Length: 435
Image 1 (cartoon, rainbow, N blue to C red):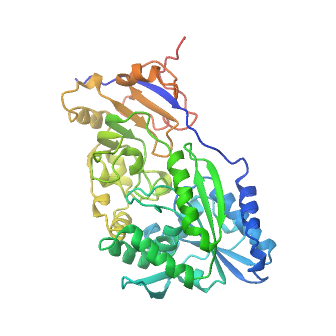
Image 2 (cartoon, one colour; image 1 turned 135 degrees about the vertical axis):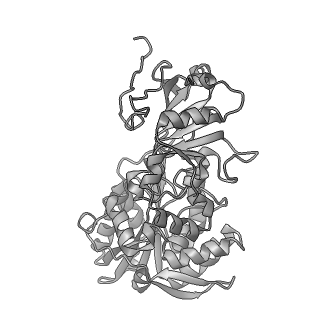
Image 3 (cartoon, rainbow, N blue to C red; image 1 turned 180 degrees about the horizontal axis):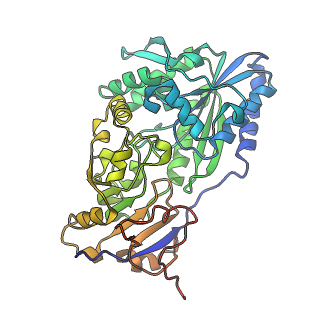
């Protein structure tokens, strides 16, 4: 009979700002660009909306729509998410609606189509695709979160430039660009396509969002087209500094409640789990270093896409049962990372899965295993940690210990409580210090 490690919970203290009024910041930033000089009454303005779970995204888009209404323009929202949503217009609209981005809430139409226009050929020889609805608009506003990419590294990673490339390229463009990235660098392809898009596709402005370590809106900045590249470089440096992290640099086991496209392009953020550069292990200079990772479920907002499941070793069987295999393969093949759709070892219960994992961590005895348990890679303010970390945690000023080590809360079926790691959930079977 395996003896499981005891667990205690910590709350992390992160540095980073938070905007009290994101909608007000959108208005202030857009007003600062004096767009009335370029936008005439009656002109159409396409505003992009992506597939990530960005904090306050509905209110941000609503405020952008309101600004252009005030200018007398005719704004509309364009889903800009490459092959996500199964690579269909209906699937992409469904993703937006799941985030509360509806025509009624935002106050404008949503024009979802997978049709693109080939605006030219890039210097490298491949066609440059651009969403047809956006191309036909008088102006395009590119709105997206700026953050480190889960797979690529550079001065520009995931943000406005990538939205012009992959998001507005739709399925056809995303497929072409990911193929090109196999022959050229990510930075070269982003720069090459962005130059063509900026010169030929009526880009009016960028609206960049940066989040803090708690997944809340930290900064919103509007940028003129000529300032997009340098502006995004600066914002990426902020995003790197404010991104959430695990509290320890090494673990035998990481247990993750959920992965999903709303959480990260790779289901779970590989920057957070230390697998950005190599499959199934950390690179030499990369932290954290985690031996094995398991997921317990797919997020409800991923709509069956399990992209990223191939980056981990173990999973609860229900994650595979919820997996839309076709959608997952489309996304993985379009991105050119087939391993992201491969299947890990699956088990019917958490107890069985953890028993197997504890046999795969070398000579460390199960009660002494370094085990971390998180909800997902965006929600890292509170983390369950095994007793092996307790003494170190007691000496850390950035960690607040919320309870003494106690047994893992398995139920009669051998599973952990799905709500245990959700925000505001009570500490099951916890003994608080001093009680």
